[in-house]
Image (cartoon, rainbow, N blue to C red; front, side, top):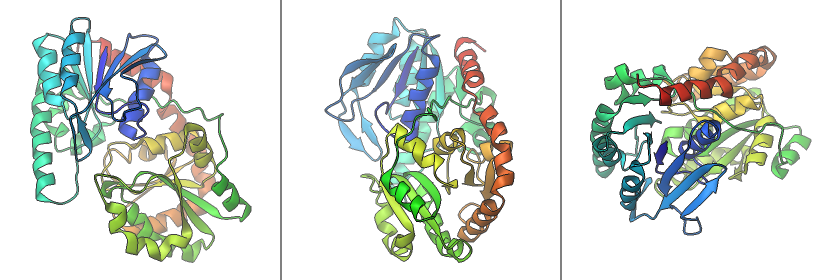
Length: 372
């Protein structure tokens, strides 16, 4: 199997991390090569990660979130002769040429779709979205099978709703070693101060809705005066200045927020295990890897009630949902969840069952191997 993905290890975003987790789950049963972009000069052009071959191609230019690589097409051509199936991790800048070349060589084409492209306001970004939608629509038409995390998201997606007859919902495995953790000094200090810690994590971009959480904090503090919010992730994104836009809002609550920066895998486990809840206030989110990782570490979730994202909480009860983009409701639901946490914790087993790697990997293996 050849997996084509714009970003891969060691890129830290969920769209890259999820495919890393996927290769870990499948490498015993499949011979896997990953075709990706060499997004930093220090990265090797080729390397082995366990039994998985990683091939990184240089990029020509950066456009919005993508680093566009034309040379990946030539690598794909060189690999197709020895490949049975191509899995494209989308959104992908090359989704259409990948799809066309795969079908020209009469190979099976699978697409795993991680969400509609949603860019900030502006005419240029609207044009990019239209180009992406057109390319992806044709690629989905050519694909033998299409998957995303949940049917709930597929029905709401501006693209996937046209291909429900091809959709096979799959939860990708999450390989987080919850028994290995490394202390984060700032969190340790807050614990000594008896702070009530809530976490949020990811890229600080508009679709993740962290400004909604900022708006909710003053209301939360009225009921939980010792509440403090710790953020794992990157504030400043080169393609979107959303954090800068929210400086005035941040200034009002900055004494109650601490930025931890990017955490390694063992620090991330400590982060999850030492917060009361993980808060996921996204405006749009196909699934959100953060909530799955947190649940596996025993931490419940407070999430927006939006298609895709709400699936784990709704199916397991391991957390609460709030009205999307409503800071007042977020505050109310967070306070309510904190007060009844003991009840919520009883649903941990149901969440772990939904995220069971063994059963999820078996489903994915059938999706790849079976022709219909």
